Amino acid sequence: MAKRVLIIATDGFEQSELIEPRRLLEAAGIKTTLASPTPGKIRGWNHGEWGLSVTVDKDIEEVSADEFDALLLPGGQMNPDVLRMDDRVIELIENFDADSKPIAAICHAPWLLIEADLVHGRTVTGWPSLHTDLENAGADVVDEEVAVDGNLITSRKPDDIPAFTQALIEALEAADEEDEADDDDEDAEEGETQEL
Image (cartoon, rainbow, N blue to C red; front, side, top):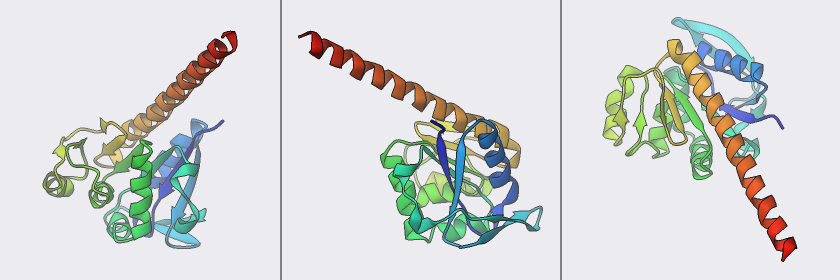
């Protein structure tokens, strides 16, 4: 069964950080759903001006972490700044973390991880202007194209998108392997019970 990734964004998302990871994920056979507190269409920000509009698949109130295998949070300065004030968005991020599902945040999106209180004691990266915010929240901040710490995947900027998306794909593949191993263990236990 195809893996499912939830993308949360609103007006002012960094255009490349939503569109390109989504394209790469879908090319890898992963289904994506874009949810937003803003109905209809949301507009991207591209090189200092408004860019493309994309259609929202679901209202933020209509989705739950149970329906998806991972969460993708695009950056852009405006987008996460608005979203971090939305209680439902923060609740969803907390739910993904509680289920140990991958959460991938790029550029300014780690602001959302701070708001959800997920970065303390974790190794993360983000847009340079966020480094002090991340450090103040207790994170170990690195300047690398992608930082993976447990279920958190973070990157700095649009140039990091290939490594960022690949890290998310690998996290989903690793989760698949764990699920298969768990299924094999359950089958073995059932076989032993039947022999008794």
